[in-house]
Image (cartoon, rainbow, N blue to C red):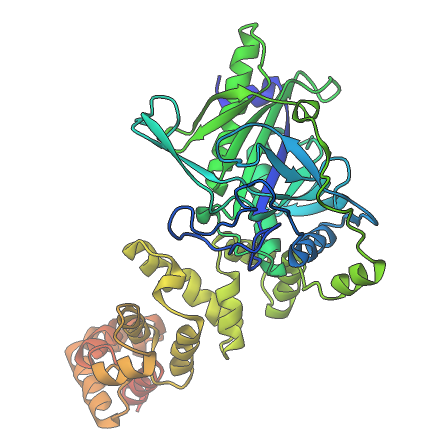
Length: 493
């Protein structure tokens, strides 16, 4: 069944579990380095491996970051909480249990307001945000898909085991209708932006810093009980989140229409096809046999400390966007286009470097975006905000027009130097020689008597027909305003 048909027939309910790796120097419960990459099994200690006799110690910075995340999500911060052992066997969990939090999370009951692409606001209810440690990484060798099925053998790297995580769990998200997939991806994007604003994580999804488990269920109507859910694990891009939701809604609707039952299970998302496949039966909380971690004392964050952290919270992304839109004089649509293109930060930095907001927006969303698309690079890889501000400054000084500035921009993006250096080296500065400009104007007038007659007759738009030859004669370096004034002076003189 197509997604559009499934949405008409059933009411979707989604739930998102987002894991964010915290940017602490060391792991959550031991002094092993918390760094991305490195040789397999090099960022480890006996505690990372769960060796007998090793004991965990809580990372204070990890607790601080977790509290900041909870506060930013509008959660209540627990006066006391504790860690628990989540028991399950998997090769990348060296202790055979994960140190997590169960019924006593650090933060609970908040909400996140998200803005969809057309400006619609939607509130996501947050059930909890709790601390835990990450697992290691399995690499399956010999199979066609990179998964365990069909592999000859598997390798385990424990570098990631023990990396501090905060898991943010929503309540069931209802009322999304046909926009369920968009709501899911926008919510995770909003969280990513919050993590970066708080400076608690690099939040790079391509490195696995942020991962989402996407729960989907269907019911016949908004008044019906919740349906059986599936959980698509470890989806790590916004586009994939949207595709996973759309596929699961369509797949589940197809099964229900055929009179089949939905199995509560985990599922894997396949990037190449946009489909999900069955993983394992989904366990409920009781199956993990949670019990308090005996090697860690309860955490009791003082109210003074919590309020001190609250006072350090930066302006959150949604608030910042609204403020900047007002300061810059941008419409809601203009601001959404900037945000959706991922250009808000670079435009802000360009403005801070001295450019006018409208000019910064024009260059980043126009010529820079075009070049980035042409070169198959990100805009941030091509040029810096300082360079764009310098380019705009040269235009404002009358040294470049837009056409010449585009040539300068291309050269800057190719690594030829800063805008002023490129302009000088290539001789692209606007012609200041009045004699040369006057000669070009006189030549254009003499060669186009019919155009001159139109201008004398009051058809001022005909001036454009003379500008082409003038620009050609001056290699595009004529000051268009001066050239037009000179044309009128000579024709009417």
